[in-house]
Length: 428
Ligand code: IMP
Image (cartoon, rainbow, N blue to C red; front, top):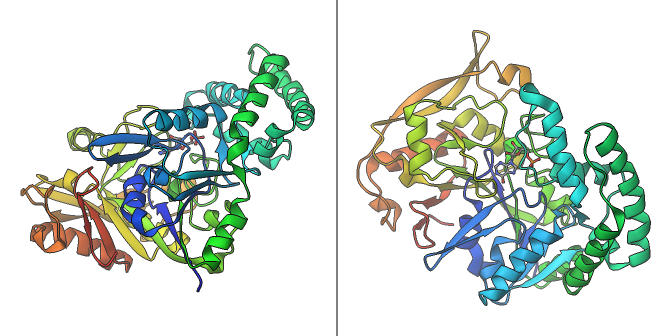
């Protein structure tokens, strides 16, 4: 019997509530696997009234007897990872077995210094608004083939050779271009060696473990970080992250063939948010946007930055359905829209006087896009304790069904509050 891979991806600009959808599927899953990004992510899971925020650990860590994998496509900040692990261990909640791919790249201290220095140099007009976690510079090293991988931390000689090369290069950039102090070798080398010692028990072959599990008929969940519109290829470049959050990134970032993927679940927030710079056609910079931010507690889980807020964008969502092959939608935070008299939903864009039904790939066109809204009737009833689809007010159901007919994809999960039990499942 062959097992099945399900991929959970963010269909917008990240922060759609992927952690809680992963959690809702948890009982059926044997392996939870992260495939890209790094500590720029912030996955919030609320269990038994307690809130957990994971930046690097897969959201399945709270499940007993499961395997949680950090794949080769992730860039790992060992300091952050070890801290997250220790926090969980201190609470007796490190219930799953963690496996880290030796081929995952390491975010080194110089990556974080470079990330901040590069943002500074870009100046106001060209800032990306990165999380400052060293993600971009770590992926640059990966692709320029000088990066340090987790497996290198386990071998003092290899680590020394690679770190000397990297530090020489980075210190030149830091001092000559960015006017920063050079970073000393010895301290960094001994910290990196100690990371290796701490991580060694977790290092394993992620691809092989997943393959064996699938042969045994087990369920594997690929857990994407960030969102489609932050994808390095398919997002609003250059205002994107440096990895591939789209579903196909899961195969590359874990070493699994695409024929193993069954369902692709797109997590969609009932409205839109974005952190950092870049185009956001349905952004509402007025009172209504502020109301969404307050009610939806839209502040970054990683940086605490207030998120930009706006309305559901069906043009962008149809695009996300296309580039990910989304076959199931998980709609989160529907309760945040309660009390809204009428709810704007963007059905197409106007670009230079012309109707544009498709998401423009070119940034120059997207920046000129203004939303064309359809207004759906709102509801006033509190939906936070609804446990079935039928209990939702008819207007809320209409909102859900509008999304289904605009995308051609069923909405199989609806979040009506932050708790684990505030989830309505429809053939999920
Ligand atoms: P970086 O990933 O730190 O390089 O940041 C690049 C862009 O992606 C910035 O606009 C960030 O705000 C955004 N970003 C990165 N991670 C997340 C996330 O988990 N949620 C939402 N936005 C993110």
